[in-house]
Length: 302
Ligand code: 8Y7
Image (cartoon, rainbow, N blue to C red; front, top):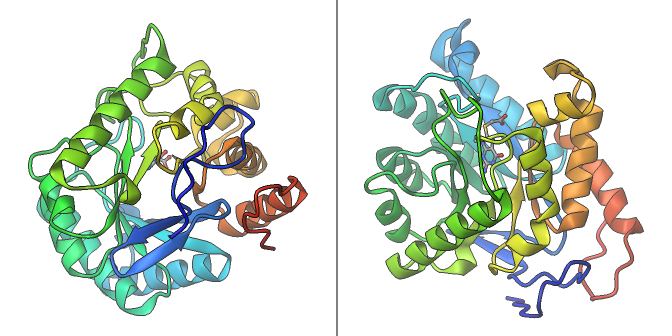
């Protein structure tokens, strides 16, 4: 494993984190920015054909994203969009566990599970998930222990408030400082519980209780976030930030803006990009990465 420990002054291109993320039995090579493909298994994907059909469609979509360049697939059964209502735990389990079981058996890449619940984490880890993506940074009872008793990777994300209400006038006196302090604390808690920095990814949580200005400040602060010593994940795909920056374009028309934001995040130091549009983002990032001068013997893949 390659561990780099040089400082992360802005413009320093040597990331101060491991270039490999261990995900239980698998591994994600972070020598260049990688794509996390989003796989939603939320109600509308059950509306026709029932659960069997939904499972087959989820598999097909996941395979498509892998063929398009995804290095990890993020399965989510609870809508965490602003304003979304909570899904009961038994329903989340029914949606997610069968999909994770099949994906872990069949796909060549690690499976990440987007959940806040310890029981969902435990069952998905038992079925072969390699990563937990927790928008609540393992703050639910039992969540930290569920991850500590395994060898999966975990993404700790910052969120202000709860999805249902988080976009109601979010206020910070210094958003960068507050997010950094939160993530530093959660990182320490993880380390004390036995979840070492080598399996942690940090995420400022674009759009989770933040205005467009907050989001931009956080994206620009990626080098500071990297100083905490973990890889950074950014999710901006189709989010309202893109709409706001493009004068209010609707969600179906945010592809080009989303790709631009992903490339910018990658060049700022993010090594995992959570996206809906895998091929477009992967190709744009590969080209941007090749153009970026390579002075540190890092992967020059294309
Ligand atoms: C993010 C996320 C969502 C993100 C991480 C959406 C589950 C909202 N966004 N997880 N999840 N980071 N780690 O629009 O930005 O995709 S859901």
